[in-house]
Every structure is written in C-alpha cells, then in structure tokens.
Length: 252
Ligand code: NAD
Ligand code: ZN
Image (cartoon, rainbow, N blue to C red; front, side, top):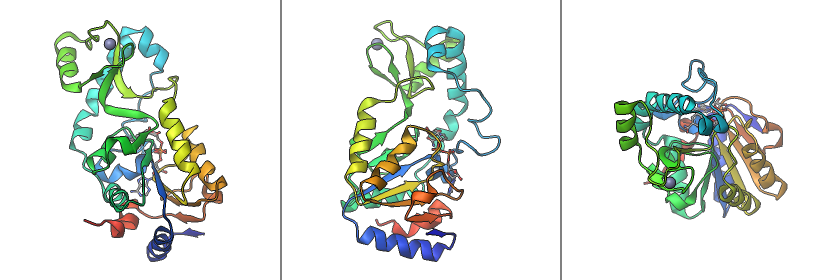
C-alpha cells in the first residue's frame, strides 16, 4: 500500500509496530534533514556541488587530502549544530522499548548516537564524519586538533605511526566495512519489521539490505517523501514527512 495520508500511515504503522517483536530501522540522509543537514539530492546541497574524492586519490595525493579537509571544515558548523530530529527520537524510543535491537544507517552524522542509542547498537554502513582514523594503525583521532594543524600549516597532521589520517567515512572506492555489512545482513535476516526511513535506496550495496529482510518474511515499510527504488516490494510506503510520521511514536 502506498499512502500520502498521514493519519492512515500512522495508524497502519502503529499496527505493524504493535504486532512486531523485532524491528530493524534502516536510515538515510532524509531522517536528518530536519536537523539542518541537507540530504544528497537537495538542489545546491553541500554534497552535490563537488565531485567526490575517490579513496585512492586521497591516499595518493596531498592536494586531494587538502581539498577533502577543506570540504570537511566547510560543513563543520552545520554538523556541529545539528540535533536529533523527531525521526531520530522516535527510533530511539523504539530502541528503549526493547523492540529495536539496533539501527542500521547510511548516515555519517552521529545523530543516532546523540539521540540515545548505544554506539554499539548503531550499525554504520558508510562510517562517521565526526571523527577521524589513521589509515595504517586504525587509531582514532578527534577533529579539533586536526583542524588546528590544518589551519596553521595547510595540511592535516599524520598519525604518530606515520600513517595518513582520514575522516572515518567510507569514501568512493574504499571497501565497505565488513563487520557492519555482516551485522546489517544478520539484523535483516532476523526481524519481523524492517523500517526504511529517509533513503532513496539508490546507493548499493546498502540498498540490497531491505530486500534481504523482505525475502526472509519481514514486513517492509518505506517512509520517504519521494518514490524509492524498492517501493514495489514494500508492504507500506509512506510518502509523507518523516518527522510528522514518526513524531507520534516518540516516548519519553
Ligand atoms: P538520499 O539523499 O539519496 O535520499 C534521501 C531521501 O530522503 C530522499 O529521497 C528525500 O526525498 C527523502 N527526504 C529528505 N527529507 C525528508 C523528510 N523530511 N521527510 C521525508 N523524506 C525526506 O540519501 P541516502 O539514501 O541516505 O543516500 C545518500 C548517501 O550520502 C548516504 O549513503 C550517506 O552516506 C550520504 N549522506 C549522509 C548524510 C548524513 O549523514 N546526514 C547527508 C547526506 C548524504
Ligand atoms: Zn597510525
């Protein structure tokens, strides 16, 4: 069923949530737009202006790294000011209720963790842009000291091991995190309700995960104001605002 009626969507969603024991939310950029972080497709969005920097270029070229960090600082204020949205808060409520064991996300903004979901229960398919990692020894680095060095010298520091530091996101051409992919697949294989929230489902292999859930007998719900690639497989498609749809599910 495809619905643009908010009341129908909320009623149907409540029935599905009430009759499910194990719910797996799967989120994309759309859950965060209410916080001021633009999604991938919004015209003039921070992401559409620039050609992505492939992983190999980042590792091979100091100039590419400089450009990547410049772009990261350009979005820093937006990310720092962002607060969890009604969508995040509703999913955190489901998590607290015990019905949602974890959340799978394509987002890199850390807002699920900020909303109160334990970090180990947030399965990040595309990493996290709020901190950095050494590409050699995998040590975690915080961004403020990197920015300080960058602003003083025009380049980010290297790790104490000599390795190159990069935000903890998955760049184009970089391998998907194997553990996160495996956990996402396991969650999809073992749930009775799979809840896609704010993803156009065009980015693979992430977009294949809802299909796994469907194939294993879960009900598939897609909440997204635009049509997605998987609407035809869904039991319920809600083409309404995410905050308006999930707001009634926030419990405190
Ligand atoms: P996308 O931009 O392709 O799709 C987002 C979808 O959300 C769109 O179809 C849009 O119509 C819908 N949407 C936006 N706001 C909405 C609202 N308030 N209510 C209902 N629907 C709404 O995003 P994607 O599928 O996540 O793929 C983009 C990739 O870019 C992701 O893999 C992610 O890694 C990255 N990204 C992350 C962030 C973030 O961390 N917040 C932001 C932009 C891009
Ligand atoms: Zn290192």
